Image (cartoon, rainbow, N blue to C red; front, side):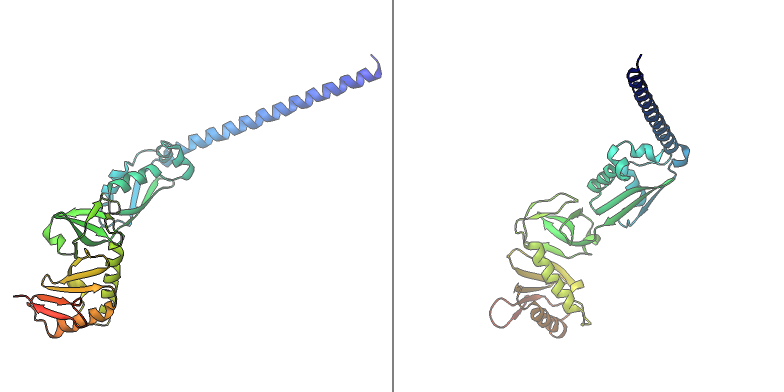
Length: 279
């Protein structure tokens, strides 16, 4: 064997040794990785992460145990095992499917976050919708919030008295927990303009009109008729000069309309408003 052949053989052997060492290093790294993953999985599934407390905050309408029940979460189980039921939950470290289950079944909840609080707790944080008024829908009293989301159908008379009522409006459809569909899409916006004007006008007055509001008729697009104390009807007409109209009615209500008197104040008949007492 000449020198060149010896050199070539040595080079070939060196390459083989390098490849072998490279493979060994890769196998060692893979083995180490598998060991680490196995250790992490075993650690995550250990008794250290057995849930012994589920804490609910932000709830007023619903009891904490109601929300926990709807979520399907229970104590006594490993938190990572529960997360692992949905791979996406493990990646985001939150119970997305549980959040959805609660939201669709509890109309008052506008947002919810369910996350593990390691090592042994789960935190449920909710934001609830605030009831605003009643929508009279074919004889049913549908309670909605300011965003127009349907919360519940009220049947208790004492509960109904807590809210003013929207009358004279038609709905395309509604589903509890979802935004109601008015046939006139501007209904809710017009209502908020009127109510905001009413509360703003109330600020510097001893007599507050907003708490005395019992019904609002929004059947005429862009116009409003309101009922106060179930006895005085005010036809405000369009939304122009609302502050003046409300102020005028306030003075009349305080100084000229007696405590039990019924009637209608009309701003739509011409230049001057007219009050017609009920017979």
